[in-house]
Image (cartoon, rainbow, N blue to C red; front, side):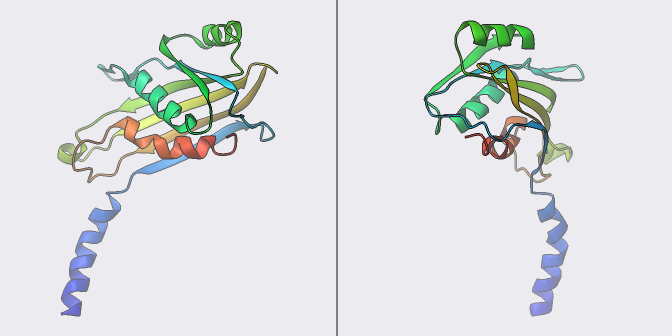
Length: 175
């Protein structure tokens, strides 16, 4: 009986490996001596929406903001998010003019929402995040998050679902 159970486990093991989402976080800049304090004001700019081929993912820029804000809201008291896209230069100018301490500038590099449970093609997301200290005019941190869903999603997974864990990791040393 044990042999039969073991053989069945072996049969399903590759399927279970396909269930797990994968993430990669590549830090390109880090000034580790800067920590955001609860009373610091943060402006989260909005990325252009993701596009894959001819498919435009309406609202994906706002979804990214929501994930970033959800990570920050437990530690910071003053967080505002953009409601529309601004270029990097314009976002810096807006945040500076409105006396924010920090600017978080996300950029969607890749956004691919697939019907993974039917197609076997995973959802994919690639996001660049830059954090600027506007008082001292320095880049605090920049990184690229790359995520891919597992193959057995059972429906309902989307690229934004791949972001909370790596964004938490990205933010942990500055909060």
